Length: 305
Image 1 (spheres, rainbow, N blue to C red):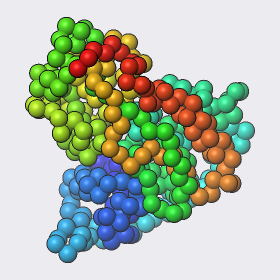
Image 2: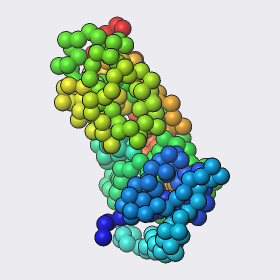
Image 3: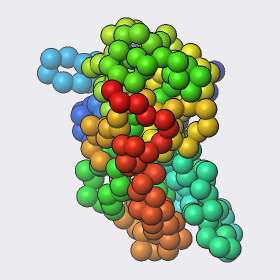
Image 4: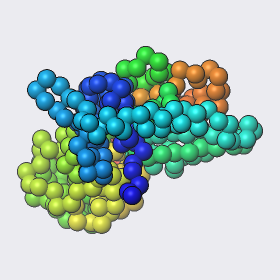
């Protein structure tokens, strides 16, 4: 039997409870296309149709209804496990879920989260899926989409800028890298098509004049592709500007997204170690706004366009 993806099962469970893919997406803090893609992937894993989409809405299939009781049992078990004390009280565990870029940024600055001396154990999970904080799938979530569930505690974080980057040895000898010719005269790396709804992917698709030569399912792999020296890619400035051997070749831009948010469960007052960690993340990002939003002349070498 295949090892099924727990997150996909969770998405299906919420979709069955909600009786609507759009409502499930709202509860999960995901886009509806993402919910649909995850359910389709689960259908492939199970070799069963689970949701029928018709002009009058989405409906569970007989196979999905047969799974529903087991899914309910699974979610109750997860709730039970989430309430168990599994970490010694003197080193409480805080589980953080965020996208790959934010995970990399926090990992490189782990000391900012741990305290001095360390008073918390940190677990960072890189995922594009919004964890269900009310079911204790995580303690803190950082996302580019504000959840609408009023039971969650939500705080706005500083925005971050992105730009186009290339290896210095590639762009230093080609002036066209520094103007709009880059979109037609260079090879590009991009995200896989199923992530075309990402803000940076939308920005690039409006400008690119040719198909990318490489695509990745994880955005942080774009940095590895740029390091390789053959392609351009869109990267957050906090990742690209701190990397040796690559260069920012475009103006910075803020992705067209729903803001940058830190999200916590509504029981935060009973968990001071989680609030403490969230406050540290918030303080770190606000103290490094120039890293997230650099001035136009900062970063790599820049040439007039």
